Length: 500
Image (cartoon, rainbow, N blue to C red; front, top):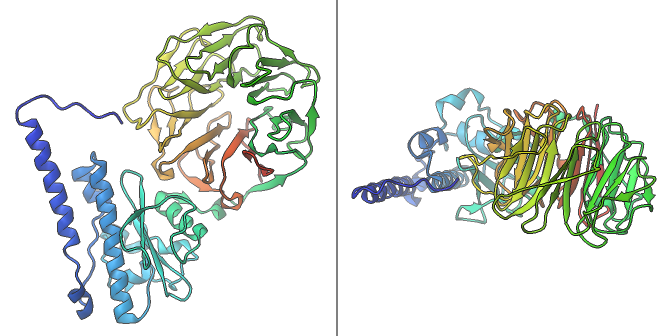
């Protein structure tokens, strides 16, 4: 979010300084409430600032939210010290509350159930709390995670005495990164993968270095167009990714933008390195033609209407433009008089009239007339502007966008007029998004992180832990969202997903 300007009154600076001073003083007061003598006499009950109280006072100041989360983590660590001193073992959240070493907000009292101590389970995360403590099976070490209202996550442990920023996959102590991530997901409102156990993934082989290439699907998910990082050639599957055929009628190059029509017969492919061009096939990849006038651009993304008559393509070169066609690619119109940036992604409604385009280093843009005119969709909720990927529902009303630089996943239900950050997913380098035609089944991927899916339009998200982490590329979905594909750049790891 861009800083809001303060009116230039004589007292405005002093008021802000006083507010910051009071915030810091309050936080210091919390920290000072816990000391070693209190622990040794065993009478301390750790008080935790709840996010609800903090948000009501300081909700617009991220540093105060982060500091409060750090204080929560430090207070929970103090409670672990009490447990170790009095009971000779560390405890998870529910056991700490049951023993009286952690106080508990009344709203979450009904949800707290004493556990067995080991955090190979999500019950260590108590409803309505924004922190969690987990221990190993021997109860000889612990990890505390605390979520800030800003979306950041902090950790502290028996080995780390100061609250430290947590990032997925990092080593935090004796608990495995997977267990730590499970704790973080639970705190963020991300459901465990078991709750979506009807989604199954299969690793596919037989394509040299396929993992990182872009990919596009026909409406039924049977026809998939992808590329190989190893050979540079395009590959096609007609059985939902089970088998693949190398396409040699198109050149070997650095393919970046791919698109497939609803019936799987019309393909578009754009390259960013020699031989550069925007290529088109109307016979499912058997033959290709390079579109005249497209050999000097860097084609990052392509989208089209279901019937292939309306097409939009993004030139990712610095100062590049958006290009639109309303006659199946026969003629093209160059669009774009916006601040200079790098176009990264475009998406289209089924009729090709409603479009959304993302610019790395600036903003999101939408069109309701097939790309003839565009509207800059700067939204006050945007915290940064390095947009990496966008996707659209068939009617163009439901949009999803990924902000790459420590950003969020954003959703819109009004064709991009307003946007809502998906705070449950947290911030990070969000890289890829895809959507079903009705906008209910969504999938997103974080660079060097996890893949997450939702089947309720973003109300809940599920981490796909079985896939592990990676630099994900080529995320695509069938129209009904029942089939997915995703790969990892410069890797042989490529997966197809199917809802049961």
